[in-house]
Length: 279
Image (cartoon, rainbow, N blue to C red; front, side, top):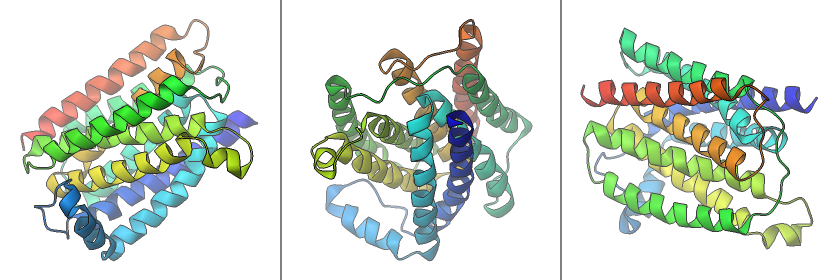
């Protein structure tokens, strides 16, 4: 029951996220391209984004998608919940080629398929999810990671080169990984207990930072180039953390397929970033 409900929620979230990516690209590209992650300009950048109807639509879909994603994160191992979200890459790529004039070569489509197949292998290799428990060391790691992401994002956003699109997409993926990890670390309890939990704050901060970085990435390059590293990092990072730290299990005897899935996803992302960034 939990498996079916969790997978259904993850796939529903993936469709919403895929559509939201296109709307987010439309809205982001109507904001001046000199935008960067600078505290002195961040407020003006956010206000400019919120004036775009397409961006507001993307925000609404992202929030609805997160509601479904949160259900998946609480019911499934992190790597399975995130693998379901990876389906959004296919939705985004298909819509981008039809609506955003993105043209993908056979190599690039093969890379997209490689990412999705790899993440699918991770999914079928999944075992039981570990318990939802507090982990102070991991919480500190998320906080430190957010600072690291913000600093690198500020540096990457100063460039308009295609490679900055990939870098900002990767950093956005790490931010969304922070959302997934924080959601898993949240404890059931009273509102007072929830408000005292650091992960109640790292979750929205991670999401907001990732959303802004992804918007900046979409300004600078193709939707597929921004989205592929974002999806890969937001899937692989929580997967590793879930297995290594939070006791998420891999099915007995399925480690080779899980490793193959990891390598396919990583290789597909690298290939797509390489080909798209030199266009």
